[in-house]
Length: 203
Image (cartoon, rainbow, N blue to C red):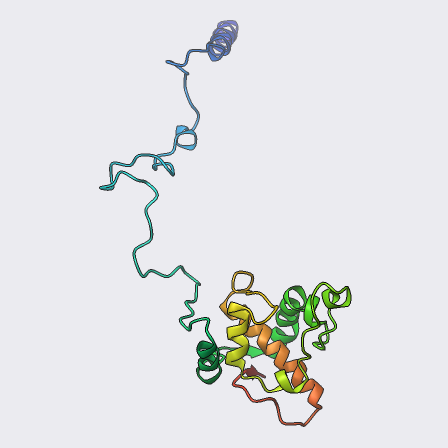
């Protein structure tokens, strides 16, 4: 009995091995988990009878906003710059750890190359004459610049500085501004009145 069982097993094994070697595009044989090989959904850029225009890649509905995206409605004009200074306020409350950690990192990656690690304008690119030296954050021009104007400048760029709207998102922009404010306040000295803004720091 055991011998017969062994013969049957070997016969089945040989049959399965031989059948697996058959190459016929009309009869590819059995597939293991075919749903992983053949998508049940319509592939991108293929015809799709579900939609009236037969296009799989549908555009987003008019007026829709991507998750996590922020729509900045103030125009990139001199008037818009002034409007931002009087109306745009920081909507976030950042902890000191966030400002000194993530805020500093974002500033170092995106801003320090021109503005310098200390915010004095002595960045790497000005030091090798690639760009004119930007003003210090501690000078009269920027020390009390409204944070709305700072945000507007990050969104659209200002002077020789280009826009950083695509590099850092809405929250990150405010976090960088909060870090710049913290440097300005530290420069003024402990106990001095902070620069005028609405940046909030949780204890």
